[in-house]
Image (tube, rainbow, N blue to C red; front, side):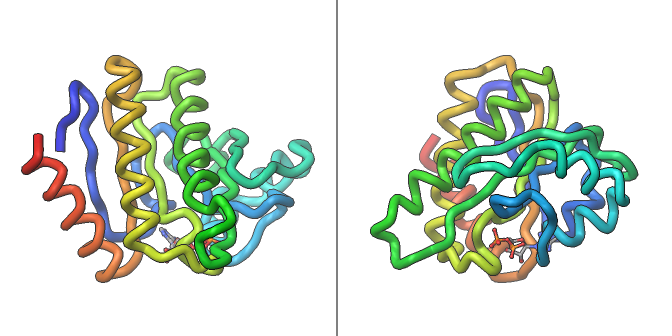
Length: 178
Ligand code: ADP
């Protein structure tokens, strides 16, 4: 779905294999590695990624920090810390929106042209995928509208058939409305 000059793509697969300038990691506040997509990214990037993360002194929920990508095809990894879902009345949506906003701002600051996002918070942190996808797409759209020249491509990388269906339906709806 093109918005201005920026293309939004949806892929089902492993984000570590995505050929973009930066992949976003769904990290935890320690930035010292975890399971899920974080574990996959650290395995694919190699031990230098953990070394780099150690120097960052952690990261607050809703924020993001950038490192190199080391052995990944991506030149950079943006480590974003999503909220743990606690029922929805604890600013979960705002924290998740902030993850996307700050990651996109970092990509812009580093002059990157393409970025790939996993479904931040939708694994161990239990954020409902329908709500998370709506947050992700909305925040990305606002960024694109405010930064028409910044990025060429934004990729959502989903891991499950269900995730693919949810994003695909929302993106289709969006493009029909515009
Ligand atoms: P969080 O703790 O933020 O919930 P998880 O890593 O547990 O992070 O899950 C986030 C999302 O990433 C989930 O939807 C999960 O299915 C997905 N995921 C796990 N491994 C990968 C991978 N290699 N590539 C893309 N997405 C992945």
